[in-house]
Amino acid sequence: MNQPFKYDRIAEKQNIIGRRAESELFFKSICDRKRSVAIYAPPKSGKESFIRYSLNILTSRREDFILCEMDLFNIRTIEDFLSLFKETMLECYNEINHNTLLPFEVHIDALDEYKILNLPEIIASDSGKTLIIYFKEFQNLLQCSNNEIEMEDLDKIWSKQSNVRYIMSGSFVNQMKYIFEEKKYFYYMCDIIPLEKLKKKECVDYIVRSFQTLGRVIQEEQAGAIYQLADGNIWYIKHLCSICMAMPIGYVNNTIIRQATESLLSLHTPRFMQTMMDLTPNQINFLKAVVDGVQRFSSQEILEGYHLNSSANVFRLKDALKKKEVLTFDKEDNAIILDPLFAYWLKNTYFK
Image 1 (spheres, rainbow, N blue to C red):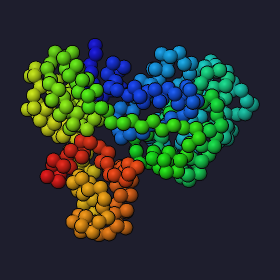
Image 2 (image 1 turned 45 degrees about the vertical axis):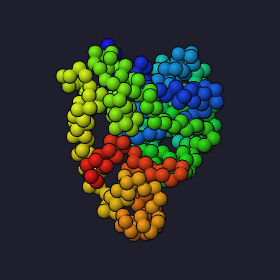
Image 3 (image 1 turned 60 degrees about the vertical axis):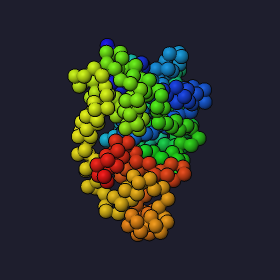
């Protein structure tokens, strides 16, 4: 049974909203340009659903590939990473070749870093298929000691592999930006696929159509209000719609949406409170300026009005809030609160 508002699992094909342009970029990078891809967005932005959807497109177009997955969230040392990488690659090789020996004469435990990291190319060449390695939470490699040296090593080794594609996905936006945009690691082997905010019309049409499928009624105006509140975040959109569906009323009006919003906020308020507890007074002042729509923070009026002290202090505040993944900044240096529901809570509750 189609359950469009399930927010606790990967979306099925029929419940993917938009993303056609991004999936075409994915296909062209992996298949036409023979390059890897980097995909990063805040948690619950639909990254994994998009990646699964795009991989299914590869399959539907008869692309022959082997998929290996690694979740790096609990990786803290390069030794942990190499151990996981080696184990995953050996499992992959054994599945393909039914436990035959690797095509080189060396004891498994004696593999050096280079041979471990080059196992994907050996497996791909031996199988005659493209090997796609999907990393979740790739930014966690920055937690490893001497991370810049290790990133350079990975870049040098992987960029020489002709039969392997990497999907490097991450939820910590600023750390992923540091890897791929600031330091430009993997620049010559990898395309960045930005997951833009979903278009309002596509989301509104999806909400209205899905409610009709489930025997409920919602007008475009109310569907638009849900989209606006969630700022296009598909997880919050589905969560809000799911709460509306749980209410024993067939027609979704503004009162229902308000009650659903209150329920959603009650679930996330403890998390938001903890975030604020971890901020200094100056960081909170800076966040207040962002909520008020300030984008240029160094004028004397803004420095005094929000008690930001100095332009040098503004730079430090930006850096601190980026490290805490509260804010990010676009190419024009405009501040963006990464969690749209947190932004709504700040504006309507904390700073009200």
